[in-house]
Length: 301
View 1 (cartoon, one colour):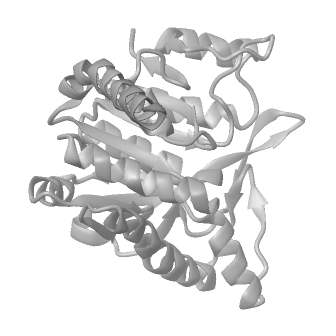
View 2 (cartoon, one colour; view 1 turned 180 degrees about the horizontal axis):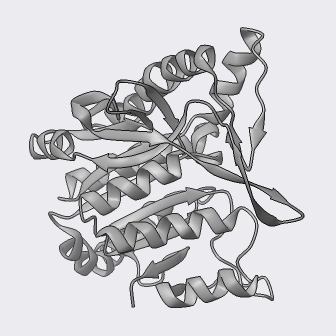
């Protein structure tokens, strides 16, 4: 009798969870959600397996997920094996001609197929592509100004084959999603003249989310989200609030480019963007299908 009672309680608990999630399932049915995948969620086996199942579930309940992944640690490991030294400026890898070939091989090959494989093993159909496929990402060389004592100067930095999205052509995304497939995208782009560029995964995900008018851009990070001056999570920010937070210094360091990416995605057409902790299992499901998501949501107003 004890066993039966326990089973009944478990079934009731699952039914209650589904009942609470149902309004959110309906809210996002048919919508596109862009997920930037990287950090601990990508290298921890338990988290990566859960991620694959979560993305598969999104597709199964009628959401159209699009995954954009990073691969910095994997690139660094391969460059080390090949005895190619790399350096960074403002968190961006300085990339020469030899290095871009390695980056394209690692990001567009091994890592891309591994991420797609996680989702495929969870029961969905994912297809690995890069920004080079179907003219998805047209890129231009990224221009950065040097900083001295935290102040931007007129001196330009040469980062080599590091780019930023100039134009997104989402037709290949629509074709795959419309066929029941999940696009898994490596952040590599090509210039109009055919040069290949390495693009920051956050930046690529933000540009893609804007171009497809995503309901949500979910940026998995290794922090809980945007924190206030007391170290507490800020659940929601308007675009104006976020800009004020950067200007005041409340939003600082590595969080600034992430917030700026969210702001650009919302400006370009995404309904909202969320910075959330990828170290939390099922972070994407918690954000989409519960009342209080675990991250910081940024919306236009």
